[in-house]
Image (cartoon, rainbow, N blue to C red):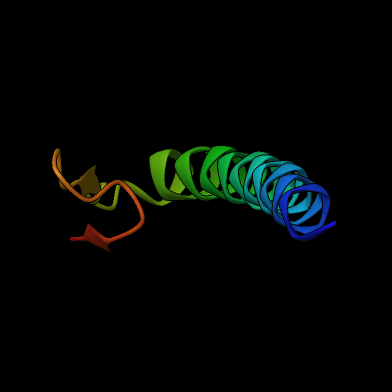
Length: 57
């Protein structure tokens, strides 16, 4: 039973991470469009290779 809970938790976490990634990509696309119209400089965001859960600007 513990393994099933862990599997369900992992599947939910993967699904949630995917939803957040899609949301952030949509926000980034909006930001890119608005910043290109304003002539503002875009910001590069990179994920750490060993720890993909952490991001920095």
